[in-house]
Length: 110
Image 1 (tube, rainbow, N blue to C red):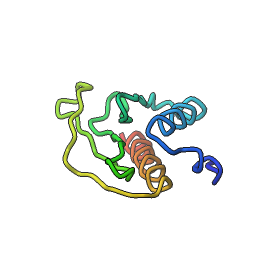
Image 2 (image 1 turned 90 degrees about the horizontal axis):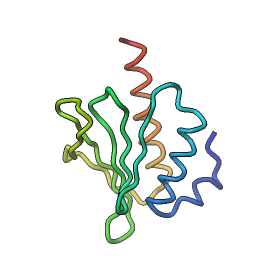
Image 3 (image 1 turned 90 degrees about the vertical axis):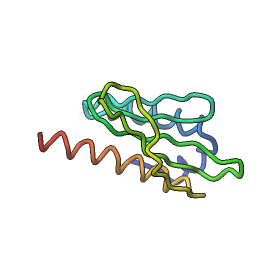
Image 4 (image 1 turned 45 degrees about the vertical axis):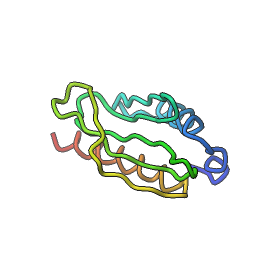
């Protein structure tokens, strides 16, 4: 469960990656979600699924959530061009939670 004090500790993409890695470690639900942090950008994907997310910040400190797609489902992701900007960390966490819920829903229907 997410607490307000958790959100207050997430100030950078590195903080976000540490938080998500800890969250996935505690409750992965057998999805094997990958969280990678590289040069200020967090990449979130799941083997066997063709979409993922990347999160970064713009020069003004605004969060930028990007959809990523693996066209051949080969683990190589490119940004789709669909993105959302927000100043709220909670919006980023909700986007990640919604993506995970979509993964869970798709595994139940297959």
